[in-house]
Length: 398
Figure 1 (tube, rainbow, N blue to C red):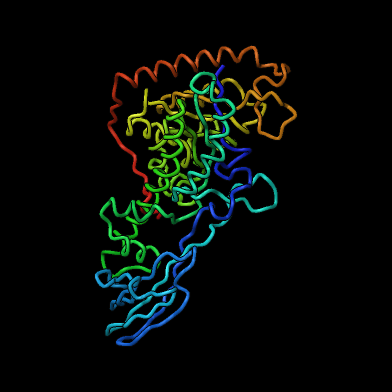
Figure 2 (cartoon, rainbow, N blue to C red):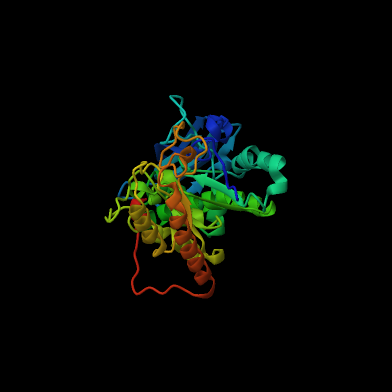
């Protein structure tokens, strides 16, 4: 038997059971602007502190937005938290950027208290998370890593923040003017610069969150002889929502060892084509295909909350629907030793020995295992060829 470690008490992952210290929670970018007509001298206090990021200024264009070519960094005009700047002629906007604690997560299964997520775009926060959650498992069970324990699993983490301390480094690596990106994201730029710069900000955010948090988790796992995998919230097109996968699920899962999806809560009825989820398995297998994951492995957490009355013909339909779209690592939900005395969601395929369908489960398991093994092996030797392609507009969502 192999045992994957789930990295959370309940879910969503990266909430550390409700114990994330404020300094490590996700960060939301805040911007305040003051309109100033020059030439004049502008002075103000409050340009410092642990939540202060930067102060910028830009001349206003005829359309009321900021001319990107005029943006200046005001750091040379700040002393001891006081801004003292000689404003040139024209209409200018002085902008202060700070960050605050991001809102609590959408999914809260711990109770009435707000539940906050770790900041995945700041290295110190991701390092704290790995040290707090992952390292103790190795300290306790390290001799089983790579043997009984093949890896860690994350479940439906959220990305409630839109800023992190590593964001500027990502923008610089992409040769993006970070000042334009910040201003476009919070205020807007004149002309064609606006759309491009806003896109660059959101693209850098997804890349930063993926590299820092998920790249950090995967690097740690590889250093300790195991793998990292999991999935996000795919329901209702959340796979391009900023708060659920930094707006780009593929960019984040690029840094995991395989693409991942779940099929739970009756979101896809057997034999139907629910528009927001029906092709989701193909998107996740594309992660493994595009980024060259070993054996093109793609996992799915299946059947959770479909109820104890789900039938084997329905399970086979769901399995086939996933397999033909490249999903080849099935995780049935669930063989739960506490069932039926548990608050988690059935079906329970063993149920203390009282599940009348359990003797037939071997037939389903053998079928699924053989098909998965065949498709995983095929992925090693062959490339998938498609005569058509599907496009999802993450930029439109941004």
